[in-house]
Amino acid sequence: METTMTSTRIDRGSTATTTVYSEGGDLVMKRTFDAPRELVWKAFTDPDLIPRWWGPHGSTTRVEEMDVRPGGKWRYVSSAADREDVAFYGEYLEIDPPAAFRWTFLFDVDGMGVQGGPETFRFDEIDGKTTVTSIGHMGSPEAIEGALGSGMLAGAISTWDRLEALLAEG
Image 1 (cartoon, rainbow, N blue to C red):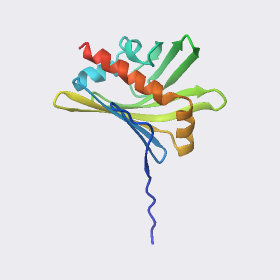
Image 2: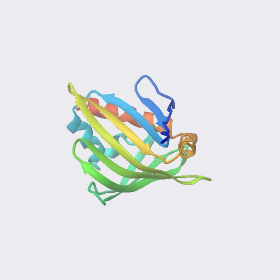
Image 3: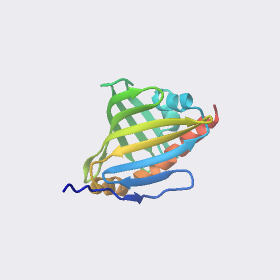
Image 4: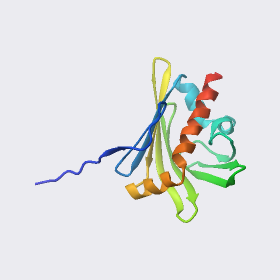
C-alpha cells in the first residue's frame, strides 16, 4: 500500500493586500495589481524600472547585472541608511513572456550563510488586473523559518507596495 504525504498550508503573515503562506518547502506570495500583465511583466524585467520599486520603502536598489534569458545572471544591491548593503543575485532558469519566469533567488543572511533557492513568478491577467504569484522553492520548513527570521516578509510586502505605486503611474 502506497502512502501519500500532503503538505499543510500555513499562513505566514498575509495582509489586506498580499496573501502569504508556506506549503512544505515552498513560500508563496500572491497579490493582484490594477495593471495589465504586459506592464507588470515590464516592471519585473526592465533594468531601468527595477530601481524605481525593488526593495522596501527607504531603500535604494542598484541593478549590477540583469540578463533576462535562460542562463542569464542577475544581481541587485539594496542599500539603506540603517543597515549594510544586501546583495540579491541568481540566474534566470526559464523565461515565458509575459506569463512567467523562473530564477534562482539568493541572498546572504548573517550567521546563516546563503539563503533562498529557485523561485517561480506567474503573471495571470483577468479583466485588466494582474495577479502575481511568487513561489519560493526554499526546500524545507526550516529554510523558510530562516528567511522569515531575516525580516524578508516585511521587506517583500513593502517592495510590492512600491511596485503598486509604480504601476499606478502607468
